[in-house]
Image 1 (cartoon, rainbow, N blue to C red):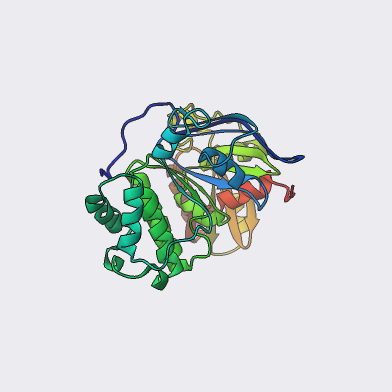
Image 2 (image 1 turned 90 degrees about the vertical axis):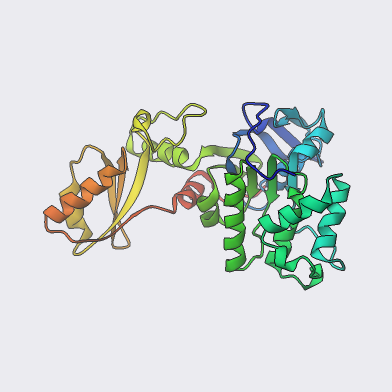
Length: 344
């Protein structure tokens, strides 16, 4: 087994979903869903319960035949060559059970044999990667919820899949286990894996995801890099012209080609924030300002050194700056703005 960077690419995208529909009886639970996930991305699949996330995931993992539409994983049509797709993906379902009356090593050796891979080397590799080496001889029944989640992830890594599809991998985990899971996902991305994961924990998705897709009532309401979606919505509010990057150009908030990308920066100052707002008023790269919870929120375009310019300008005008932070609640704000809270 070679748990190293995945470099071979057979298609433009690791995951491509086009006009996907699925019907249960008289109900269309997935309606004309289309999105792409590039190689090496961590794609967050977001939506309320009943939005169609798990149905879409089951269709991607060959467990459900779509009513209409096309899904490709690493360039392979899911409906035409499901066996090839299964060798390409690692799927971790929500609330999947584990065999409890065996040891961790026995559990992984069983599945390694099922995948027809050499368990003598593979099992040790995934134990080390998922930090389960010290628990190799422990019975699964004696493991914590977080340890069992890591064991399931170790299982789906046994055949070294290019694409990981994880349905609520941090479900019911305590804070420490969630941090460990997030760090593991970041490590897997660094190894070149493409990861699609669904979750309801938006703050944690914002920390690990490079792009997202938001479903509501079976329809995809928005998809793309978080910074690009946020910039597009901010530009719509402020009237700034926004040009999204072409495929492969990277984050729209960096580089001269995308100076219209809008970022929000929070300033905590000594004295009334309204005074700081008046002092910064007129800067050409500022597209909006507001006072929220005693802090000045500045919406701006351009590179990060403009933030340093604003701090210097405030200090020169005798306004003490005690805190500067780029807004980390971008994903939560996007979710609230593009969804209506409706159920199917």
